[in-house]
Image (tube, rainbow, N blue to C red):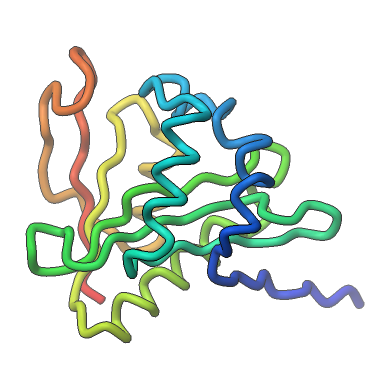
Length: 159
């Protein structure tokens, strides 16, 4: 009988950033929002010392193959805001995203936050399904919030 190894997440370290930069800037989400290598690397390096919750996951032979970034108290001042979650395409469906989301929720609860908010683009049906499966509900729509012609769906979960 095969026993699945649980996915383990860990805090992101400065020395992990170059590994992330090997794949993260090429992700469709980053390209769509015109977040190039320089902008992404600066954002990550700037966030590391701020107290933001930055988590990564390592898969066999693929260190730093997923990233989650949560900003404490950025959820309308009453909770945390999940700024980004991204898993390498060839590693999706292996539980990395769910493990990272759970780690961010746990870290937010540990800081006394009672809810977590996030935005999902209206065209990203796969992400919407994922968040709903994880207990999030759509709380609103922000029309043309980031890009013209793209609505951002506000999702929320009571922790």
